[in-house]
Image (cartoon, rainbow, N blue to C red; front, top):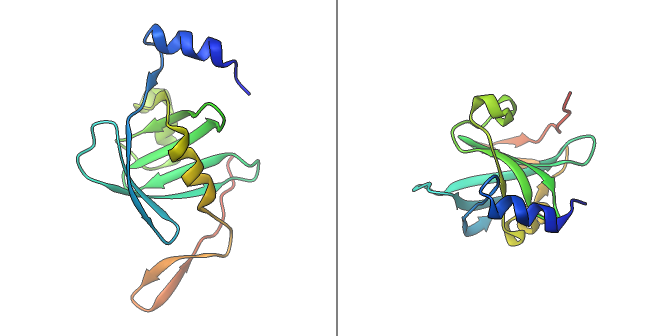
Length: 131
């Protein structure tokens, strides 16, 4: 767990921002929310990698939760793939509301679960292995 007092000082100095998240609801295993100044609601799926790290992904947005207790995350609202979590590709570090992190954690997909359907055909979550 990160030192909360030290994290708050970084927020005060403007090094790390508190990210505004508007949760619009949930449907199945998706959390619908707007992050920061997004106008359109995104449907996020949440999953964990082989080391238990929490990720959330939408069509053009990705989040990696660094610390679930404090809500510290790396995120990018301009790209939805893992390489978009690199700071040189526009990723930012911010503190997300605990409510949003808890909602993601409670709706995580497990390997082999149905994510949705294409026509009548089910789409299964294949898991996540990061290198």
